[in-house]
Amino acid sequence: MGMPQASPSWTAEMVRALPEDGKRYEVVDGELFVTPSPRSPHQRAVRDLSYTLQAYVVRHGLGEVLFSPADIELDARTLVQPDVFVHAGIIREWNDGTPLLLVVEVLSPSTARADRTIKRRRYQRAGIPEYWIVDLDARIVERWRPGDERPEVLGDLVTWQPRPDLAAFSLELPAFFATVHAES
Image (tube, rainbow, N blue to C red; front, side):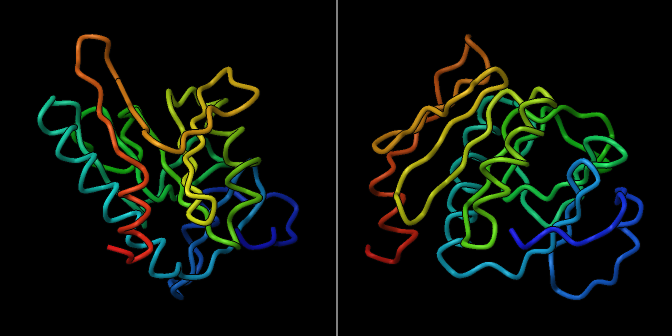
């Protein structure tokens, strides 16, 4: 994620008033982040995760899978744009109170620090049940839950079971990363 911009304290309302200039603006606990457009492997990862998660979410009637751009306001001083996210139910407005079940951020050189620290801690404080950080270079997924102090690092298979009565979603990571890197 880009460097924080100097300001006393940004709000979600202030971010929404910024011009549409092709950059992604987010504010976390009053700190503004500006991110350039992502590269093609990042976009392939977002596409493939969205597609595979959507099939699972629809099959089990969990809600819907969406991706950025999207203004997800966690509070008046935090507006984020997760790469991929799962809402419990169908949302009518970005901040209609529908809970998030899963948030996924795909690392880019400009986002790694904020995704791993600032945004991760904010998602944990918000009680998001699972937060995945997809590291395209290392070919791993870091799974975080609200009380975790360290991630579960996954290199072969990532699973997600939003309810105990459902079969788990699973994604084989070597095949996923081969597709993302246009190797297959």
